[in-house]
Length: 220
Image (cartoon, rainbow, N blue to C red; front, side):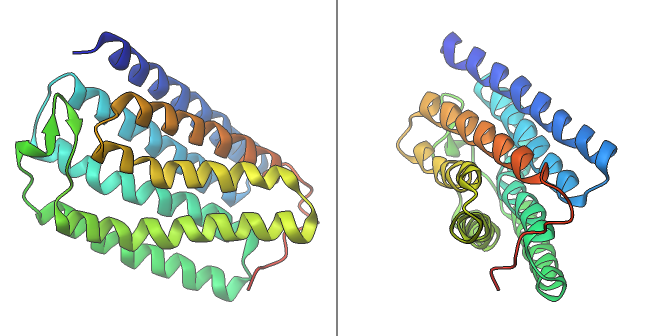
């Protein structure tokens, strides 16, 4: 085991948990639903990092690996709910929530039923994803990542809110960092996840901190 990598994953887990707590405390104080969704999404990032720590430490179980594959997809969907709550008009928001609910349920069922072999791990690092898990994950991650990026870029262009670039870049990093697993660069993946979470945190806090009387115009 590479001690530096193991320590990095644990440290990143703690950072993600702290950032999730800050956003959720903001929801408790201000009662804005986008804080709840964003905080929950960052908490799922913490949870998947904790699972990565367990896998890297040599723990193995079907439940652990299946849970990991499901949650790495769902966390992007949950984050997108916050952006939908903040940026979309009511009718499109409900459509999006329905889509994420259905796609997330399908991804969860497929992930729960798809057998996972120990060969997906190499030295505690995920180096292969079962085809059905990859398809199920894509149902959630690709549309959700696009919504996060599009709503953020729309705000940058229409409102000249450059801080929204934090969300755009952070989402892109998290959405595509998983590909680093396939080329077996675990340390790079963990640092990419950390950078993505921190950027999302600053984007969410800055965006959500604006006055409620000035809602973001819908990109639809």
